Image (cartoon, rainbow, N blue to C red; front, side, top):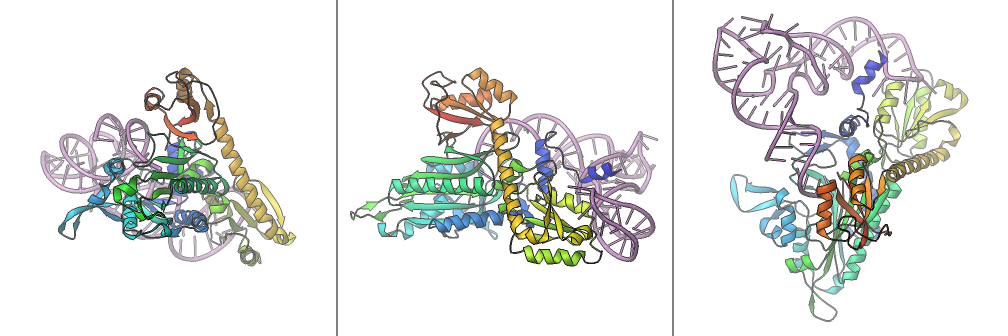
Length: 478
RNA sequence: CGAGGUGUGGCGCAGUUGGUAGCGCGCGUGGUUUGGGACCAUGAGGCCGCAGGUUCGAACCCUGUCACCUCGACCA
């Protein structure tokens, strides 16, 4: 009977069907809703609030490192998009076009930005005069459109929200340093705030961004062993500058081309949080980005003094954490489940028994451990407990990644592992495109990244047998 | 874009040999409850995805079409 009731809103167990589990969590935690436009989703208040937390953390770091926010047009003339040929080839299959203004057909069709390198370059070419103005360190928060064939909330939608940084520098060294700095900032966001361990590395020629000289990435592993790219940082050299004729007068009074970077992180990170930390009870949010860090649930709230005590706690603790008090008429048990589903890191229960003893019960979302805390100690204990939850989340995520990372030195081993054990496969690689393509055909794996932290696993490439150049991660990606 | 599947109140579903739609959850109202998804009473809510066709009669049969989901190929 009680079971029947549970079934109604139950989340599909992860091990039964991970994809369905994901969809259930996303909808039941009220993060997104589908819209009437295929492939476009609505970020609901709770989902958007998580994004705002991520924005705040990233934006602060961008500002600290000298970047300025700007807003660029969302429509790009076709001729502009065509200027860099690798770039346009990479994006052409997935751009949406505006062909009419009102009832008038446009002379030149306009693409809805899939990314804004071209617009930034065009602008840079208009404003840049002298080396004295460099570097220009710009960022914008916006949404972009890519006409994906199949879509999933957060992971692959036709419109997604992100930030895209675009910078130009006087020298290649400076631009490369910028690319690396931004990758570090993304890694720091993931590791310190989202509690997602990531592998920093470089993309192969095949996997790199259209038009880039080098693409850097942070790769995280989801609970099911698949990879998710958490952010990318590209070094363009002067390729775009030349294509868009961005020039400045150098120190030597000669016309020069600046060196350029771009970097981005998107709402896909939220998908990463869900699939890294979630469990069969639903979402589990890292305290740093949880819109509600502590939910206060009064028990027997109609009894004398309970609501007053709960309100008092809420007011007091508002300075310590993001606190919500739920005084709705649902039963406490219902609220417990509800906020677990929504991933709130800590739950604070206060009822008549607690009030009598001047204490409350705090329950961790990650372990469900109950801690009795004297009311006067809350300001001290809550931050500690939030920290404990965060560390526990990181530890479990790291453990999952370790358990699902396999080192292979032969093709047989790679194929067997790829077919039987979801996760990352680490091997040596000769650096040839042909071997990378063979990996896809034979093992169904794509390269994730050439990790920054290199190690010598073997001397030869397991695919062709020739001398190996680097260690590389393979996997299946979202 | 290939292969498969599903469209019936907000959600999940039932609907027999064709006879004009029902259940659970949720939602509203009143009351009793409250330490792991409470209970009683009462109420609102449905062009059966859409368009044709067959038939005296279609949620059900036929044709077409659209949307969504899953799996592949492509991507943050």
